[in-house]
Length: 366
Image (cartoon, rainbow, N blue to C red; front, side, top):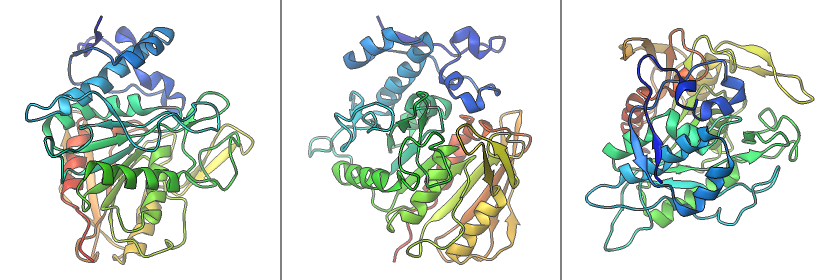
């Protein structure tokens, strides 16, 4: 039987259609997510069906969306099953161990008969307690992939002892229960995965991007510093930059920070908030401090210049600013969702504007 993901009507709430994966995102479960933007009917890959029967019905929704995103992404008569990126096959899925194979959406392996050269490659990182399916669904990635020629690499974080997925984005966050070494960092692992996928898929070397939400947004900033000059731009959705100092080598990339100014999970302004585990709390620098650090690293001026605000639907107003006098080809921007909470930055209609910003920021020449 095919798996069905049906968009709720205006009178329905998430629980009426299964609540999708955001219910599993325990830190943000206080907020209601925007519904999916399409009705999808697809057959799940055989390797997923046994797993789907053993888990909650909400997982069926997310699996359907992930599968559909791969189908919808195929263009020019191409149809491919969900691909698995190199470097993850056969990994364990136990607390503290290796993670499940990452999803590669938008194309399979390149060949002379099916060329995929020069597609941008987007690394998409979920938040704490979420997973690849939830971030694909929440951002409406299937819709974007159906209209744009790009590849999306969506890995899964490690499992902590409570079964929550997380990224090690440095000592501060988010290995709350000391699953691994205190100074462990997932940035090198993901950097290698991105490099392998870029080479295998012959993606556009000037358009390698990272987008991360919350814990994934923290890690996006880590990758921006450790990217070795490969990355063109990173987008942090309700994340934070905990690194105060310079990067190991001077970065040449663009940075966009998107966040709601009423975020109770990762505060928009500097604040310390409770966190699980022995540390009990975590102090965040705030959105302005995070972007200001990048303006300093990239050689921009400290002042911000206002741009035209962005209206997303009838409910969201996004103020946009960028730092002045950045070097040619580089940009540091701050988009503030007025009245928005922690998950508002992942509201699906925002993805079009975020992708337009990314597409306008290829890696500058040396």
